[in-house]
Structure formats: structure tokens, C-alpha cells
Image 1 (spheres, rainbow, N blue to C red):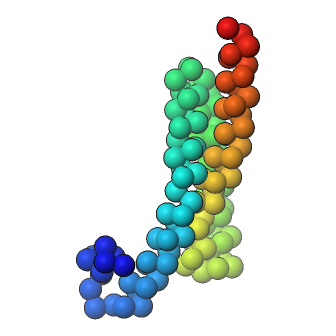
Image 2: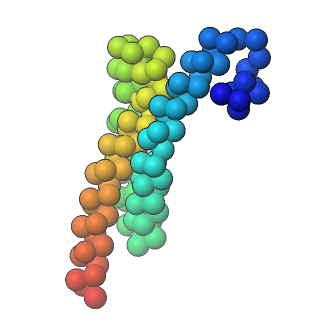
Length: 109
């Protein structure tokens, strides 16, 4: 709340809304880190096609429609939730794909 109040002055309802929206968004931030780690893994093994496809899945196929769908049903909070939900879905799928690829690499060696 103190950080938000530093940027927003004289608007307590906006501060309260921003604090709750940031809590929701930051709660799922570990999935963003998981997605980025898995994406970097595929780039590092020179499998950039998978990395690019999942990046596009995350933004174009999931995030943009979720902004509209969740925004329609849940208003502003839905818009705030679209990004962490798309990150979470893609991170979980990509995590299992990463494990599968790592096992295949270890069996090949």
C-alpha cells in the first residue's frame, strides 16, 4: 500500500483497487518465472521453435482473449488476472514439456 500511495495521491479508492489488483497479479508471479526458465531452456538447447510457439501461445492465443473474456465478466479485476492466468497455464504445460525433453536428453547421453 505504501508503494502504491507513493505514485497515487488523493485517491483512496484507486489506491485500494490497485493494491488488491497487484496482490492478485503478484501471487501468480512464480509461474511467470517458471515459464521464462523453461522458455530459456528451449532456447539454450537450440529448440527456438518451441520457445517461440509457447511465447505466442502465451500472448496471442491466451492473454489477448482472456483480457476480453475476463474483462467482460469480472471488469477491471478480470483484466488484471488475464496475464497471470495465461502465464500459469503456459508455465504448467511448458514445465511438463521441459521435463520430458530433459529426460530424453539424459537418455540420449
